[in-house]
Image 1: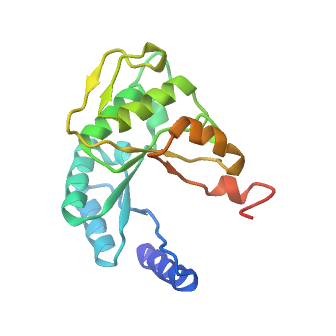
Image 2: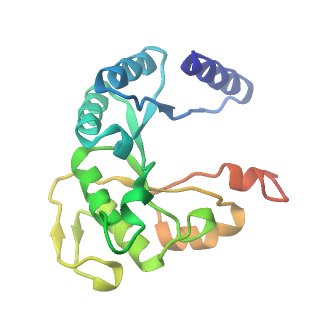
Length: 199
């Protein structure tokens, strides 16, 4: 029912504004069967993009979904919910650099990468390294960015990095400097919560 309500709101907003609107319908589920049912339904009701939490949903489920999206013409937005459990402690876990590579191998069109600014602040050089790993076809060793060897991705498609989390218009100079052109900048609560709002 949630998908139906969201699509109804999208169609209403498109009719009122004459602009294309969208929403990342989250198809993450406890089983891959349920995930695929949700994806099929999202396609049936006309959603151009869906979302999957690739860490909580599982990497093999994500690969299945990414291949299905490619075959069915839907974009796949990837959220990294639960990543901090794995990558924040410097003494154990899996570094986000590795998680970004796993996602690129598994498949997806966008991935939250951290922003350096906003509420998801992180180390600038490490974030730039993740962005390169996600997006570029050839990455040169740059230990300041946590890239320890040259990596040639060949024809492997890239993933657009997503900046989100408390960002607003005052962050634009930094965001453009960090992310350059091929990226997704999501302005939500950070804009609405800013004293100037979405003026």
